[in-house]
Image (cartoon, rainbow, N blue to C red; front, side, top):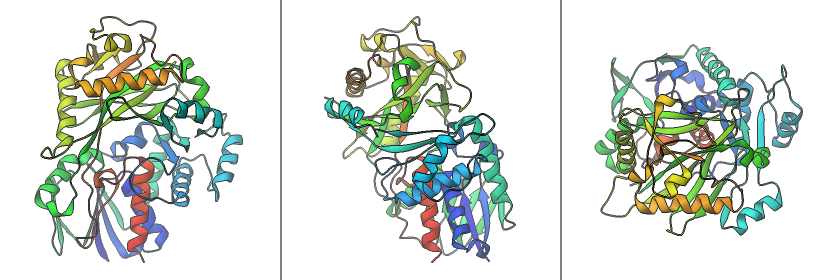
Length: 443
């Protein structure tokens, strides 16, 4: 049997293993999965573990052409393993089923963004680019069961072995690939790297050793997590997520990302800095909705470290918050008027009190990013009245990193998949990339 290593047990790795299973060649491999989390409940499915939001769309999620039928297959795979939804064959049938589905008085949330022509035109007329998609929301609560089911499913294969609490520190590429971990060295015939965004240290090391394998990246998304009352957004809850892009007057592209109706704001911790994120449960609701407003920043020569730029802005926010594990919270009115926030208005945060300080995010953001954020929120208020209320809350900072795009056609028996590959930035596209890659090598 061929010895195969998979580094990371996240969305891309899940897709890859499922692709091998469906190809009928899973039995030809002896598979070792290295995961730095202490067990399967601490794996690298950070987006899925937090919120469980999966979509079907050609307009977002990565820079690969993922066929709609593959995206549909991935949604069905996750929903089936949620323990709630049986396998279905067609997208239309799946949506019709979800409309009437109920188990123990509970339903899986879903929505279709901008299926209503009037809503589409209202956003378009104000300068936004509306993104059409289907959304399927498991929620953090249902996702725990999904994650348990997925681990049990893959563990049932005798030729798949998991090494948890194991950090891959380096990889030596040769005829036989060597993997160096905190628990020893291993040699494999084939290696899959699927470490996600949290694996940036390993990917930086690989890039440094093998620069010919990657294309330079010049992008980073920097912005805020925004929180406001449900009643402002509730007329759009049937979409589940309002997904739009907007070119600000600064020339920067902004996007509304990761909306969580009746959700919560949470910290996202990296090894040496902390950012902010959001999620929502399916059955435990709050009075607030949160979403990210991100500004895409593109750099040009000679600067070549947009990831470092984003990290340092996040670290600056942590420094101003007085703690590496705290972020800045501010009302929108104070942010817009360059004032430090000292008290709340009508909106109270869902983030734990010990995770933030009231401060001034203007001390963090460069002026063009700051002006882009204000322009986006004020323009969005023209379509969704109340988005720009003075006492709505913004948390700084939220950062989404773009990895250097990896060329998978240079080194034999090496596959870099998912968000760490630079080609994806979503659970759907990461899983789909792994799935399609496995099918492609199984011919």
